[in-house]
Amino acid sequence: MAHSLIKAAIIPEIVKLIAEKHAVSEQKALDMFYTSATAASLSDDETGLYGQSALYIFSLFKEE
Image (cartoon, rainbow, N blue to C red; front, top):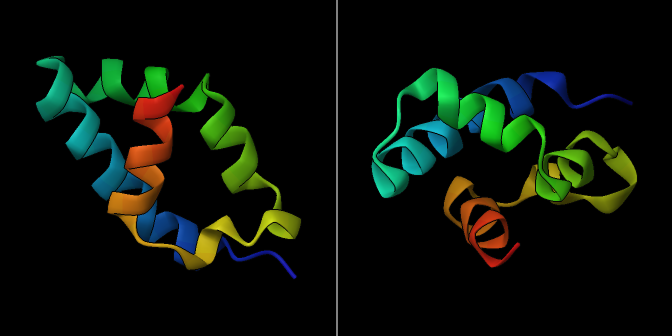
């Protein structure tokens, strides 16, 4: 089962956090996120990452 609705709610929050942290546009932040290993993990429902908070996923992104 795809958890696309959950992801659709979480991703904008993550992108906003990235944009603020790195002082970039939201488009650039979106590009940064979607090319990350964290985004790849989020897209894989087997990881269960979709059930975590945006802040937790953002912290994983920062660790890359």
